[in-house]
Image (cartoon, rainbow, N blue to C red; front, top):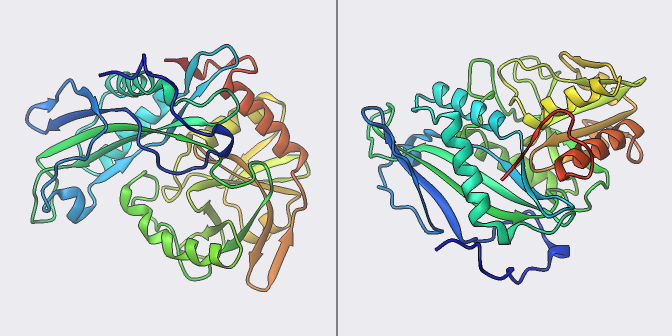
Length: 341
């Protein structure tokens, strides 16, 4: 049964965090190399039935996406650039040898999940409905080779800020002994296996008072790659810098949107390798992603050095206000980025 007519859930929207809450409905489709994808169906939120030998459980053949549905000031519900998530998922499927989900099927599924869980979309300015599409090998497999059967699932969770404090500057530590990805690997794909190895260094940093880890490249251990699960930006003399995509960095949709938005505002954006020494010499720094949107970086600890960037920088704040204004429907969307559910 769809949730369209149900009452609003008993949630304190002002206390909402970035954590799991079971909602009403989810989308499930089955596919195979031989038959392609089924049309898929909406079902009540429920556990999945998988063999212990499922390829995703034994060999990590799977990927996920992250996107948000937001309530605008006039009560509409919108998605932000869902076609970009669909295209990135298709590219990831090719890299992980999985059948691609078409762009039309992907967008239809996420729209339907947002629609049937609309009572869980927070009021404007109180949070978002986080949508999690996952694609994985579901059939049993004992040898290391692609599965024969696959599942495409989309579920939804109401969420608040990823980092506590919203636009309060966060403190980061540069990882000295761990790397997120290496050349030739799957760092440019939102593969499920990319994330578990980061839990230990991230947990250690958080236990010592830092918000997250900064990863450097695995070859020279000199160039900034990502902030945990977010892209990195820094600003020097009014110029915005971000690490270029080399195959080891996830091509973030928020990252791309910030680049396009900054250039439309007359700012110069440079995509190149960003050394940690250069990053520490900048005037401002921030990280960006679907979960965090834009989070200002207040300080970075690297070895014996701890660089303090102070409060929220002017460029960081201007980009945040413009981007969130477009996402939430408070500002005109001249880019046609938002799609109504």
